[in-house]
Length: 197
Image (cartoon, rainbow, N blue to C red; front, side):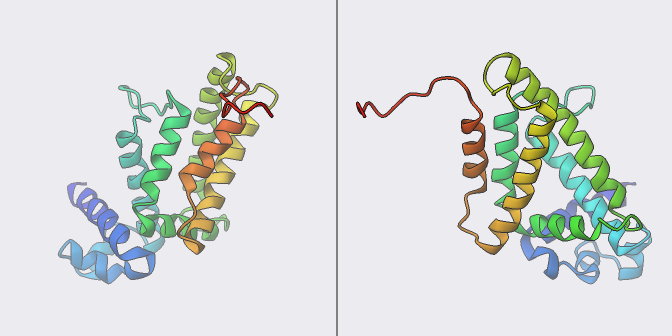
């Protein structure tokens, strides 16, 4: 288990630095002092290795952005700041964004090693985000005209879609765009520029 954790931690660094295409099994094996066969001894396949890397990324991000409670359950106390924090961080690790996007497309095949990971991950994130949005709706910070479950799916779709746009156009402000969506959903009066239009 310790070696597997070391592999995953080093793989996060290599992929963040070298990108998905630059992170071959050989490169990852070299980073931890193993042969390719030795590396794959810890995983059933290359696809399982990359899925485990994404699981590790989620674990690190959740801990870093306060998305876990002390008992280990996933939570989002402030959906806006937590979500924007992860999105800002993603802009600093383009290789991991590339891996996520590539694997998510491949994982639509029910037989793919990452299929269950993406289905389960999406459901858990939507459930948690939906609960956080419902709380914000109750306090009047988010419009209640849209069901929180629908809003959670919209935010997920926007974030995933923005990652593709950002990979194609690196000047896209992913966090700024998602923040604008939060702003658009805030029913409270906003300060104006002071003009008497």
